[in-house]
Length: 104
Image (cartoon, rainbow, N blue to C red):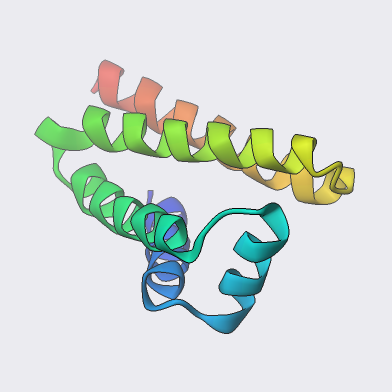
């Protein structure tokens, strides 16, 4: 699970502080910068919720919404398949975490 949490914590922090590369990406997608910061905060909160067994399902739901939006955005922008598949693969990992949470 650390392989999921650590990168998303970093990416959420980058969005929250408004890193230049992330800001340029959100501008290219046509989203305002305040939305980027909300997504970053949601990612950070979701990471912490995933750490606690009782709140793990809420964290999974937060990330499912974020990654569904990312997939939609990449498809809408007609990005290359490599960029579109990245959130799909992460969403599959998220599903594995969810299933593990149910069985344990």
